[in-house]
Image 1 (cartoon, one colour):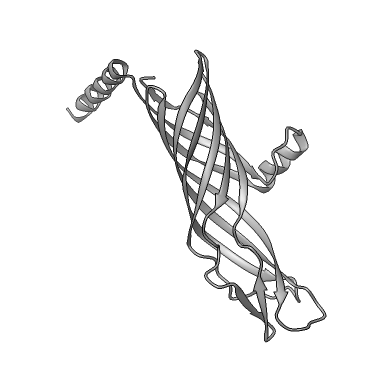
Image 2 (cartoon, rainbow, N blue to C red; image 1 turned 45 degrees about the vertical axis):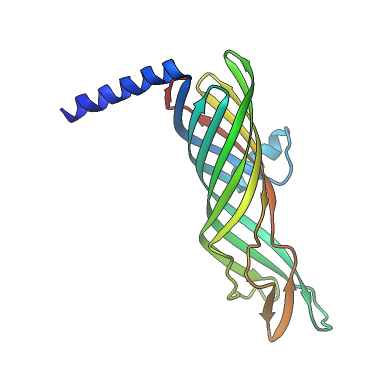
Length: 215
């Protein structure tokens, strides 16, 4: 009986979607992150090997308007230059390695429909959650008791292309809040100042609409 009700609910939703111009899509995504976009094969392979990204997406469309939340997992590595507050004979840097979850919530508009190929643009906020992190200083490779914020905020601007059941997204994400609460760190008894802790990056992902109802 429960299975029958579920089937009836899906059929009803599909009929409503066709009648009202509403669509729903859901599926997996994979891709990579890069500081600079490139069509070079070696650069793309390097992006996948070093900054692999995987996750899921959902999309609700109403005519040419769409809302697309995503949940993406990725690794990140950043190097921050440290400026000493005292006169020192070395210039250390801090390397942060993290595992992260990103939750973009994008609002978009489909500006060109060529039947099998559709083009769209989107914008929206991004929440970043730190799953695991590790900080090391190149001065004697010592571990530091430095932790990034577990939650930071960013924004995203994106362009996308849909071809049948495949969806390609290129998003430019920029940080709105700093990774660290404090701008200073202590190494071997000396105080150092962190440089900018906001990051901008491109995310390129390819998704498959495993569930696609309506438009």
